Amino acid sequence: MIKGERIILREKRLEDAPVDYAWRIDEELSGLDATPPLNMSYPDYLRLFQDELRHPFPWSKRFAVETLDGKLIGNCMYYDIDMARSQTELGIMIGDKEYWSQGYGTDIVNTLVNYIFTNTSLKRVYLHTLTWNLRAQSSFQKCGFVSLRKVRRGGYEFLLMELLRDRWEELRNGLTPKEAPEA
Image (tube, rainbow, N blue to C red; front, side, top):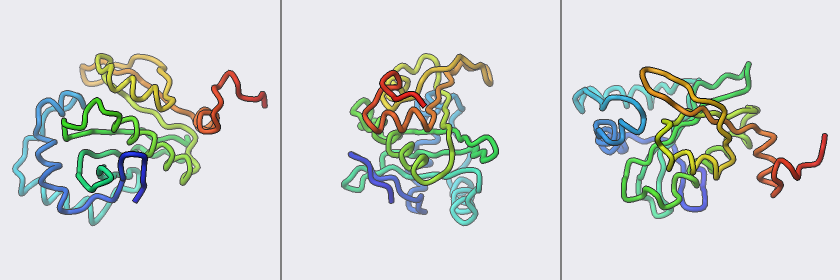
């Protein structure tokens, strides 16, 4: 369990499956992820969910996101973990729309990034967000991510953003990169 200011990141559980499924078939949520809504039955989804719980992928770490009072509101993950290049991609989804635009996303990202940089040797966290998703971009920028360039994938245009360990350490220590002492 990893505690943020407003949320808790915890291991996924079997009882998360019904809510996860509802989020995965939601057209609006799928649109924010540039994916089509899930098109499989719940029993088929449940089998896949159970398999992933039993046999997690070594290149991916997934978390359920709960409020401090225990309400499941979303998921986050870091994946495509590449130890040779010392980097990973970050993903976040707040499925419970009642929790949008209230600072939960920023807390989730800050909590996950702090976990990554504190508990792994990775030096770069990056993400892709749709170019029109200004709310997400604002949240990522609050966490220290910087925009690199636009990227086209699967017919969508994304903004590639990154946060390097050095910048994270500067921000954590209350310094802006301009104020950081020269090495």
